[in-house]
Image (cartoon, rainbow, N blue to C red; front, side, top):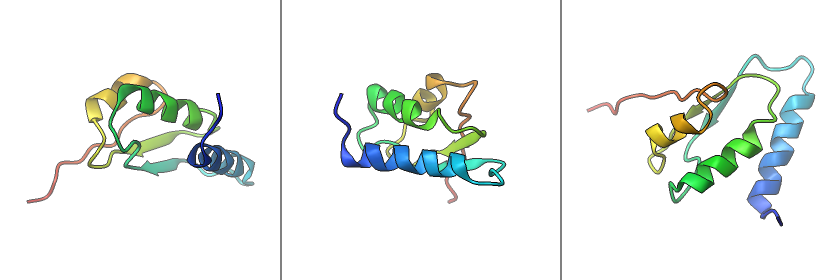
Length: 86
């Protein structure tokens, strides 16, 4: 599969973070994780993020389905959810 530029950039970011010394304790991934909110897009994003060598937390954006995000890899990428402020 040929990677798009954003996919290459994300993979490079993950590699760069993994090379830090000392390593970060945690990585916060802020949404939107996908633009379309489609299941396969979340799965692909998880595949690109899973090589991180430290825990990461996903903060969903307005295009992200929180329940779908939780279902991708609940053991590896917990979702930080927050209600909207009124």
